[in-house]
Length: 181
Ligand SMILES: CC(C)(COP(=O)(O)OP(=O)(O)OC[C@H]1O[C@@H](n2cnc3c(N)ncnc32)[C@H](O)[C@@H]1OP(=O)(O)O)[C@@H](O)C(=O)NCCC(=O)NCCS
Image 1 (spheres, helix red, strand yellow):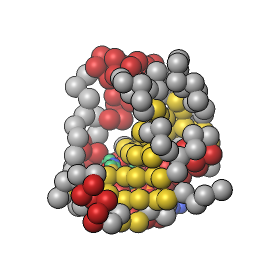
Image 2 (image 1 turned 135 degrees about the horizontal axis):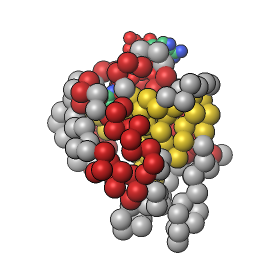
Image 3 (image 1 turned 45 degrees about the vertical axis):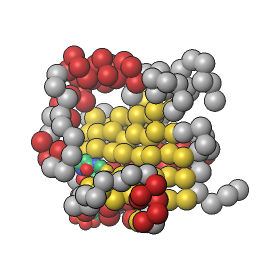
């Protein structure tokens, strides 16, 4: 992988969905998507302005954490019609450990679209970026997210992993090991 410059990233297909590597130019469309209050029922908050989102996205175009140690991958999820409906993201460590997250506008929940997009990302993480262990941290009350992860093959991590990774009491850690070979 090219850690000296921009990390290569590819557009992915998932059924009718397309997953585009995130660019600063996605900020206008994504500001609207991410202004949906339903997304923040359990955690996080909407971006304060299009300008702030564009600046954040511009930084993310390097695909690297500020210290250069982690690969930060973000894809915008688009319908076949071209409409942006959310994003999927992954943080990859040099040892092959990857953490994933995702957000979809609530108008598109309940159709299996987030699952489709997340699975395409998981495949890409394993095949192109050699991820060996996939993780997700979520609020215990976020049952939609938990069901999505379970459908993708994740299981609740052990109590030892929870304490090793200092997971908060109101959160849960889910894990999907990648079979060797
Ligand atoms: C988490 C989140 C992405 C889940 O979205 P979702 O639409 O429920 O997830 P899926 O794409 O897996 O869709 C599952 C639903 O679609 C239904 N569905 C319909 N067709 C389906 C198909 N072909 N395949 C799978 N599910 C299908 C399922 O029955 C399920 O509905 P249900 O929840 O009423 O049982 C969404 O709730 C979200 O963006 N939340 C806010 C941000 C967030 O919490 N992110 C996660 C932080 S860890």
